[in-house]
Image (cartoon, rainbow, N blue to C red; front, side, top):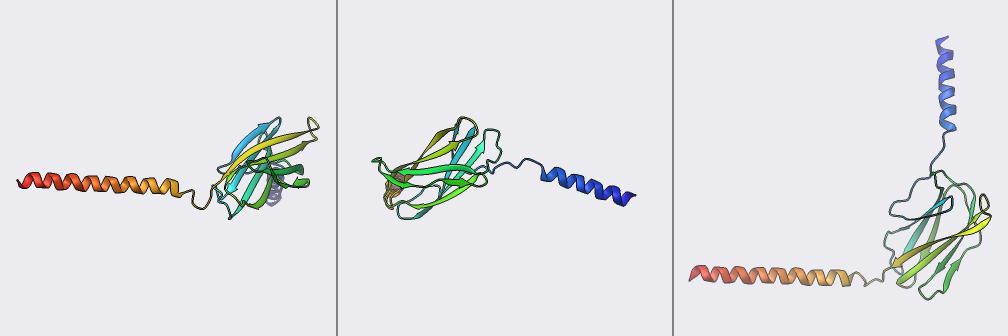
Length: 172
């Protein structure tokens, strides 16, 4: 009798677990937007894309309550800073709330990702989510590093100068 009760309890637990609502995994370091009943996130890997290196664009689509949206039709448009369309996809069916898109930016600059979502569930219209991505050139980080190195060198030189001056005063 106890064995059958255990089996029934395990089956009931398994049924409850299988019918639980699955939530889409949020993306880390993502830009977020909400339009209507949809939450859209976009993240890049690496976090700071660099021209000439491959970048993985990660897209997450969820309902405002956090649930997975299944088989959502989208189109992606990638536009550069001069409004030139670089990529325009055909309709993509996002199977389970997440989509990955690989792209290599050829030039540094600011790019715009437009993600058009066909909202057939609520408004029967196209909802356009807009995300900006800044792409660095291979030498862009020198503008940050060079002044820092110069400031550190000036600090060390100043410290040595004042230490030598103080030592000379003590010796007199």
